[in-house]
Image (tube, rainbow, N blue to C red; front, top):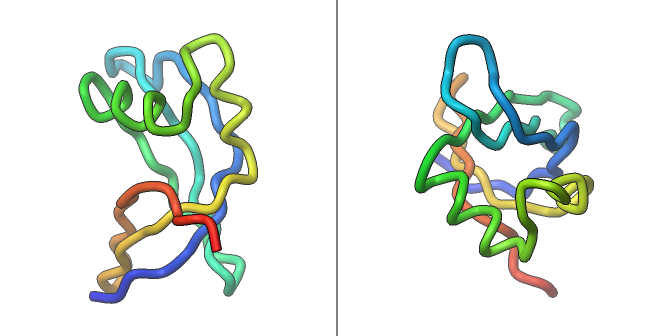
Length: 84
């Protein structure tokens, strides 16, 4: 497992398929690969709170740097990247 920096793209909030409403976005790595991230309930609320946004303005997270854990083909969102 390695931790990498990714970019959040396609950020939105709403229903994804048959799931409850939640936060969804793609995490794009430096090699131009991307993984869809779906966060619901407490996880979604925590990310929005850390990002300083609410349901109505999650698009402000577009382009934001984040940390992800990469384990083979599995990519997990870990949080926002610290400012340099």
